[in-house]
Length: 81
Image (cartoon, rainbow, N blue to C red):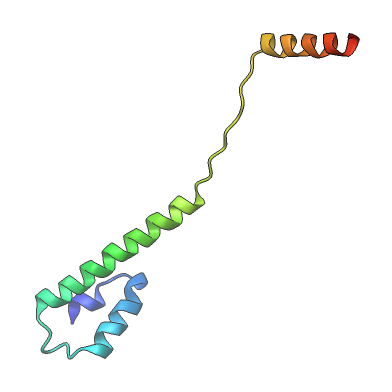
């Protein structure tokens, strides 16, 4: 079928599976399109999951110079006592 030949290379495994599992001359167009749409949705989910795994969050503690000075003075006073 022309539809299967026009799909991108990342769809090759699905095209092969459809060709081997079904008689394409008797396969209704709706079933073929439904199968391809399901595969497309699954591909999108896998892509989203892999992108989510790649994202890393970094939390940094922010302080001002005044806070550091106060903390340092407290440490010095504790050492003197």
